[in-house]
Each structure stands twice: as C-alpha cells, then as structure tokens.
Length: 191
Image: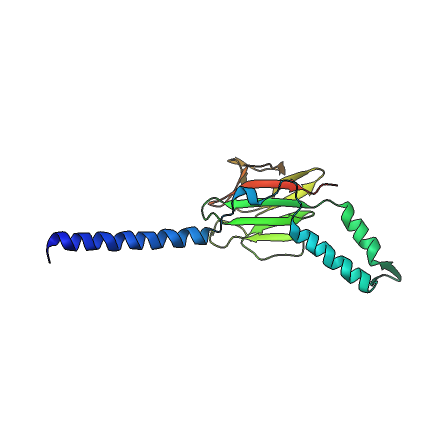
C-alpha cells in the first residue's frame, strides 16, 4: 500500500467521523424553529387540558373544603381564570438548551431544586457560581421583572448588575455566574 492510499483512507474515515459528530450535536440541541411558537398563545396542549377539566366537571361536581364552608370548584376556577397566564421561552446561550414555561406569577432560577414559593424552577447545575436560589422572574402588573434573590455573585441583565427588579423583554440576556440566558419570547394570554 502506498502512502497516498493510506492518506486517502484516513481522510475518508475522518470525514465519516465528522459527519457522525455533527449529526449527534444537531440532534442533541433540541432547537425548535421560531415558527413553531404562536404569538397568539393558543397552544393545542392547553385546549386539551381545558377539555379534560370540563369532562371531569361534567362527571361529578367536586367540592373543596375551606374552613367550615365548602366552596364549589367552579368558583375557584373562575378566580384562577381572572389571572392571565404568561408564556416565556428562554435559551441558554452556551448549551442552546431551551426552557419554555407557562405560569401565572413567578419562576425561580438557581442550582437548587424546585421550591413551593415558585410555580416553575430552572435548575442549572453545571455552573458553581450560581446560588441555590439565584434570581426570579416575577409578574407585576402587565410586565415581567427579573429580581436578584440575594445571590452571592449577583444577577445581570444585559451586562448591568441588578439592585432592584427590572422589567424584561424579548432579546434581553440574563447573566448569572458564567451562564447567559436569552429571553427568546414573552407571551401573555389574551382575553
């Protein structure tokens, strides 16, 4: 075998390995095209959930005990429906991991696990500079705000350190530790 033949064989093997690596990376990113998200915030998943809840209500009317009085479930659901849901899509700029959340009031972000004070929680374990409860996205009025939760290394929004809650919007970058998370989309439920 000549040296040229060996080099050609090595190049072919290298190209095949590179193709396999690229395929694995692309599949592991789990990136969805932007057009899969609807700005009108009418996802089929939520219609299905509403249909299931309607079926449960039609089968039997449940009652919930509150002190000595009983409050029909329908009244509780009406109270909950007066609050508007938020949908936020975030993306870790290093790992390209996307986080999509539907919530009413708040989302916690940190190294720790979900706590009862937050509806949803983003756990980031691969950055030691992030506190157990580092920051939170909170709903106030018609806006979402980023709030530092007394983290050791601080929280940043677009490179600026947070001293108080700051309103967030699309394309903002949240900095915590060495991690950067971009706000891809913020949607609010319509009437």
